[in-house]
Image (tube, rainbow, N blue to C red; front, side, top):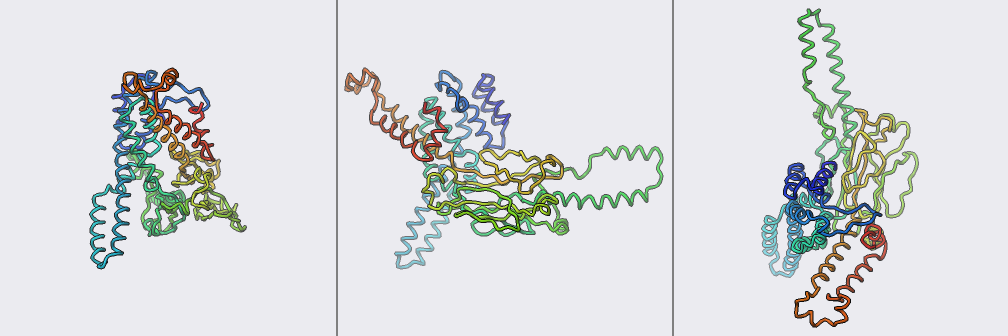
Length: 484
């Protein structure tokens, strides 16, 4: 974040030209295209904070913005195009599969038709963009960033970029559930093996919830033989002269062979895992394009193992068998549960759209104040129940569940429709040198109404409809500066 703000300041202060700015972003984030995209959006943002007086967003006030936007689009657009093409390919494949299945059912020789269907499917699949490729592109250039580029293109009057980005954004919105499916189930996988079989249709989150406990047990296991060896060496070690003592002193300064490993990587041999009796615990997530069981809320609660906990309607609870901080469970007798709520009516309730869950992840760190990934919300309940006074101790970890919602997509979708209609209205303006200008009534000319009035009415109706219901209230709160 600090690097992104530095790059933004250098661009907006004039210390960097748009070309230099683009090059610096590429050098600063050579392998992280997502942070590269974030840096582009942050650098081009000239808005004031909420509840302040908005500045006038005209190119004359920010002369660098038009050129910088072109450079920024060059950095992000390749990922946008990959996602767009992938969404079209997936949709076309599903259409063809459906048509061929219907043809097979009506065929007199279904076996031959099935062979042809399989051959066609194999050919289409080989020509499609790989799932891993378009998912990485989707992560690097999410729809929120894509729509923000469209807003910048409109502000800088870059019609070519606006039309191109708008077209691809509408495609991504139409096939949103191909790109970002609903989360329909959260579960837990326990195993003595790191490579345990994952149930069909589930996705395993990579972080082992018991990693902190494994790190602690490994340290104890590795420390025990060292102490034993040191005692044996002390008994066998003869008296040494000054020369030997000097050499030993030099050796003590040498870098140890076993350097501290990265906190995220806990490596243990099969023998060590067997001695420790380590159990790998991972969250499982099931995704679906069907809104029937879409999850619209996630929470974490600590439940007393001796008391029955009443689960509300449409809610489901999953016990997390994590090994809590030493002595905590024996004292409290509480177990962490992940509780999630499913939509009761296929997301027909607008309130559900504001809390619709699109992803779940796990974070851990040495502080209870660890920040969630960008775009995620941290549930402030430590699964390990580590005492806060042990913050930043070398042998403790705090573990939290985080989730991401599709709430802001409702705002961006309304922005997109409004910008599209505003663009259509702008294009309907009749130039004074046009023959059609003479056909405009004089009264309309006097009030400068030289555009399609019907389009203006459409914009008014669109804005009115955008403010209806719970989503409309949220939209108004998010965009109140623009509504003034």
